[in-house]
Image 1 (cartoon, rainbow, N blue to C red):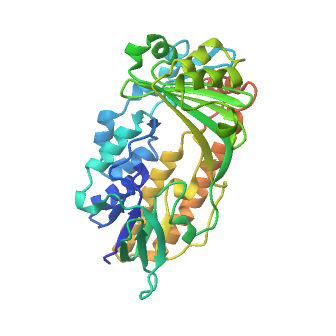
Image 2 (image 1 turned 90 degrees about the vertical axis):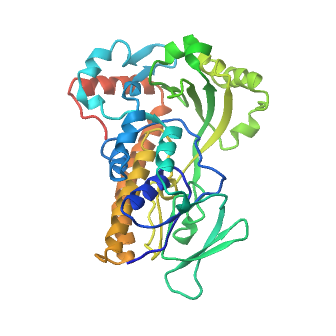
Image 3 (image 1 turned 180 degrees about the vertical axis):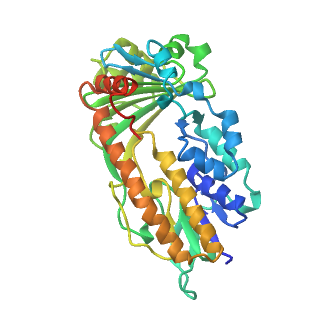
Length: 399
């Protein structure tokens, strides 16, 4: 059965779906609001059973392996006072290296992953500068949909519209009225480019992977990127309007960093302050949103959601892209079955959602628990103790 399929949005999750469908010779059209593929975002760790498996089914695992950085799957935990509690590039290095439970999740820059996924696609399947405004049922044919775009154009008669268009999805309203809500956390993102040369102290202190510090109402994290930069995040449990009411002029980056630390982080260790104060190449205040844990909807013929459009989470479990890429893998398998006549398209969509709902709920629950742990007193110390217990075989590594 020939299906007319639209994929909305061109993030890694949508691109994964597109690549798997292409690998199975199933046509689709990918619509992206901007004039090019979006490459923003930090480093990701792809898990063997989810993100890596999806890339394998897309025929791109070898490409991933060429650019992945297993040496950067390395964690450092620091108490808010500045005490180093756990360092996989330091005191714990040999013990962790000998334990396979800590391996298998190599880092890759989001930009590089996007490049791998986008360069493999046939150009004729992609339409840029197509900002979706709404999806409406086709007036003439049952179970088909028309896409309306901001440029005034309309494309008609789609059998399946897949919303991979993120937090503020224009496809989601066809399935549920639920919208993302404020997570309670706001995060200041900061960059230091070419850290080895521009700031050797910062490069050495952060190490090859990720540094994390957690305490009551705050979290400081820094992560190495494949291009040699370091992206840092100073996060606070604050009201939604914090960025506009805190009295800081965000247009003056140098002063803003100093005032942010003085007003909110004056009590943390000096090294942690330096991470923020010496990350001078970019500054982005972010308000973090999430969808309710366990969000479901009644299956509707011809429409479904993947990735953040379906289950937006905060980054505090580091699983969002892996859950989304698994969405793409499962949905692609169901579309293939429908295209072969093994089941109807309605049955395929329902089967995908039946699998996705409990799986995404599992990881959204984990994310919520981690969010609580990241912003509690002695959060970093509890995390370090957990890592030691796992290493000693006294508890299972969390999935």
